[in-house]
Length: 265
Image (cartoon, rainbow, N blue to C red; front, side):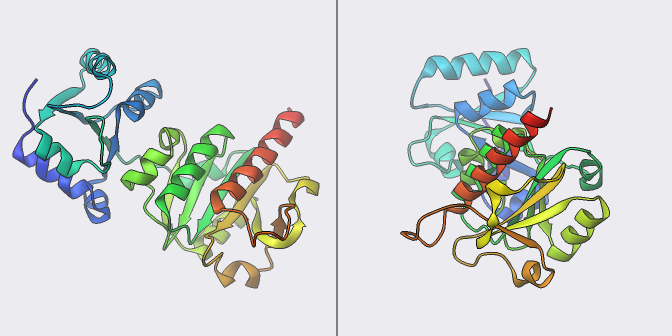
């Protein structure tokens, strides 16, 4: 196995920052679990970096290297210091994979006759976004629409928290609420904004094409949605806490919607 080149080390360092990811249209997925999930999903990395001193199970790393060889995926090695500079975790398991950021057509997705979407507004915490992506994959969400100001979906922590969901769910980033609303209306998608005191979500018969708008815990959603009289929906809860975590609320709504869609089939 060849040693990683200086040019690729420079690339990896750039990909630890949002600007670098956007300029290169690439991102890093760290750890053997994510590489394994990517290969299962037939999402192939550009190349894989293996630490000279990997932690954890060497047999699992070796098995992944053999799978990469069969798929003609290049693996290169990196010294402990160089690898640690590019890894995001403190105790890395010694595997990094570089992937292309996929490009999707939102208009094509919106043409589907049966569709659940999440519109994410002011989601700042990468762990929250990753968890939302994970459960979006679990509950057959068609895509995540990230408004301007949300954390980068390709952030290393967000990718790890997705537990492989990022390989299954289309992500559309840097959108404006005006553009999203126009697109939803044009394609017959009904928007619902998650809000305390809204109509009980479990009592609503959601239409075939539904979008849930989820705000961050600190700021909530932008005033835009209330100004457009978007229907507010809420979850049953006690008064012991102000609200649910954004990822939890999104997951409950997606699960409820998923169950309803299964009954209709």
